[in-house]
Length: 89
Image: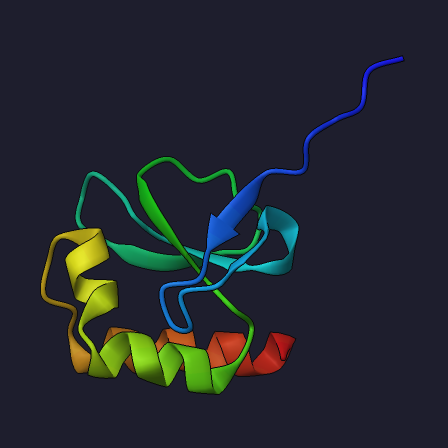
């Protein structure tokens, strides 16, 4: 019987590794739209973050989110994502 490896991802806020299913994925699609991807299946460049507001704040403060998605992120997008993350805390 094979044992399945749990996919691990690193939170860009606290920089700790967690099982992929415990994190939120933020994705930038080919049209440069940035969305919170709760399904983890949207196409595009993705990055992962804990479901904690403080991790999201840290990712913004250190500019890790913008670097990871390779673009400047408008303030209104930060607010939308922050609101969504707070619903899942």
